[in-house]
Image (cartoon, rainbow, N blue to C red):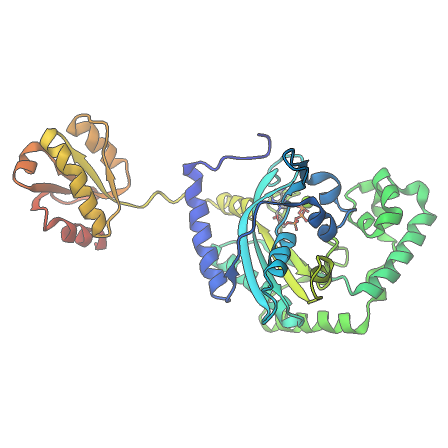
Length: 415
Ligand code: ATP
Ligand code: MG
């Protein structure tokens, strides 16, 4: 299906490598895994993300379940589901929660490089935390992950969206300003003038840019508390030598954000340059029906991250394999899978040749397999309860008893 990709074995190795690093990284900050369903009631996303956003207006895969009439949507992002799960299960009752999830998200977009209809995110949420220290922690975490992955050329943009009152004042000024310039608005902007004027600032239409440049700035409306929060976060970033730019036009495409927002951007993926984005959403938990609690989170796009790494020449790591087991003859065949199981008992990764063929053709497979050694069993070896061990990266073949075999292979691997 358009925009929904198979990840084939030749590429999946890179995903597994990435997932290992990510898990270790998240554990090093004390974040715990949570897994939510891929489907949620449509109303949840409308309420959380906002009715007048690109995602809800035109990107969701929503449908009616014909069996019971439920209105359902394939999740376009994870924060709404995560908050729903946390509230339904009362996880915030005793303590704040540091959580992460990872998996497919679905958005009906025009497929292109770095933009798919089924794509994958790692999402990280800190629920129940109010201070700027957690905003900074999230950014420091990202910086560490880029170092671990060897990702270069990403820059950090930050902004603050302030709190409800300031946003309301700003909204009124925007409505008045864009209202005075109605003839310069495009169709989307016209529609959003009263429903969500903030979204007009997000417009990618070049013709709209001069008008947007001159629009009232949220910065000028911000309350002292929000400014203090923003400044305190910057102090922490500076203490850790994290370079950033303040981008006052960064508003993000989801309504639930307030105060800190941030994006990690690279110039190397064309227009799809944002690899990671997030911010604070102090209002969301209350909006989804819980007792109001502050929160902060971010999500990164795995496809975009991996394509950055591939551009840097990163290749799919080959499947790790210790032994390729070659066998020929009836007696040998009946012994081969017993030996294979014994070697696995000893902690080895064993590919048992199946489908017959000459020794020569089987050895060719073994050579091409990335295994450290071949274990070779013919009827003569089988009759003597022995096997030949042939190192595939140089070294002489040896005839060994089955008891000696695992130990010798472990020695070979260590070399
Ligand atoms: P964009 O501005 O590129 O549309 P967004 O603001 O819609 O991104 P978020 O909802 O913040 O993106 O999602 C977080 C991250 O998920 C993005 O920074 C990006 O890396 C990735 N992402 C979002 N949409 C897609 C998509 N359709 N295909 C691949 N990755 C995506
Ligand atoms: Mg988008």
